[in-house]
Image (cartoon, helix red, strand yellow):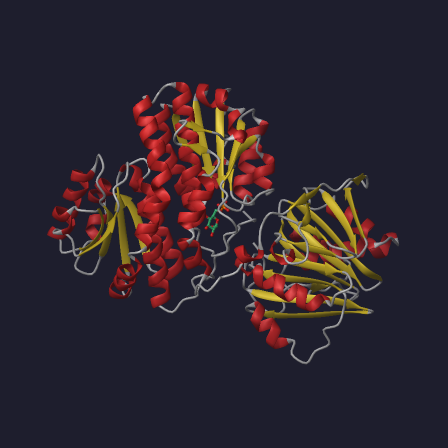
Length: 611
Ligand code: G6P
């Protein structure tokens, strides 16, 4: 949460930073601000979007070749101009932006107030900044030294960027628990929460690690640990193209990302799935295949949509591999004292690879001896690096706050892992294995077919957009799809929606059913189909409105429902990758019909780097 950008070099910093902030707005959009060094230090900030900041600075002096910028997701202090970053220190000489939470800020603030400091905001950031300044003044040291001393006394998570009116052309950056990428240009450096602000300028980046501090000047990047020892920066090549982070003619990133799914699923399978040879090649999994096969249990750890992917994987792994699977919310798992036994394998699932709870959960499990495999989208992210092995989902940058293409890519990867293990372990017969491999390769074209029903889904969104609540039902492999459909609707349209296992409806939610309640039922042809049809009848008997996802040709079920969305036939193991797509579209079109900004839903952020 919160996006940070920095630039130092020969260009004017303002346009580089503003463009970068727009690309990082998915990380938070409560306020935005910028600080520029041009002999003196100038700070401009505004509640609202980056575009509000642009309006605010019209006619102002925006010169400066070194600067830092921030787009905020509020933690300490409401969204306001005063709480917007950058913050200025008491003397006015330092400016700082921060992504994260300083947990011991209250004590630090008390101490500073006792020493006469006054605060202009409610943020933990301003506290840390003044703490740094106090050290700098008392120790008569430079900014770098002051930051290092301060960070040793700080608990919490942070990425901070600081500039000092007395140190031209210099940005001091440090990280613990939140992401920081430094782009290396010719005589210039770029800093960002991810690589998107620097894509058109450089493909060479350094991912800064926890407890590292960077001194960044146009011609110089010095990386140190908090013990003041130099570290050689590990320069990596980016393989993201600019087009991947642009809307390319779509109204919203979310729509673009939904429509990219035939390609992203294909990209995820490419080079891994060999349907003729009957093999699945995943190098990051291969070396742990033996441990997975022998695992007593697999624990899937994730948050949000990624947690739903874990739930689908639970059904798939148990069915195909006959291994006990548990699916855990990372935020719960990290604070329990979970029993980790020898032979446990943890699979961490994360689009961003930066979700704080997931990261800490796997670090705890790792410390207890578990093998950690990451199923992660963002290459080089913290979770990817903290894992022993794993597989990238190769879905490309996901910018829409509501996750779509990352989910289907996660399912594709998890299905491939399960098929590989089942095959190696001998828990799947060869015929079924070969058939599933062939069908997996067909998923992209089946998703393509579903996308062709978009106009029908847009009409349904229009028809039901004024409902106060929605219920989503599914069974078996499609139960997590019902959860995911409900989550998407909540996130994007702000309509209350609940996902439930279809049979469980009788234990509570059925009390909600009346003629005003739309019930979305995933009723595709699978093992549970006839039971789900009974559930549809129970809803109809109580006058509920049923919108069912049905398999092509299932006229009998269609006749029972108010509205249907038709999806191609698929093996039930692969069905979630297909059946989730119309539910993504339903949420998208409902949000649009209600006039909401679906790429930036209120209160949410794409990457939750705070607890
Ligand atoms: C946030 C996002 C969700 C995402 C979840 C987990 O809540 O808005 O879309 O599913 O975080 O994020 P991760 O990056 O770990 O998959």
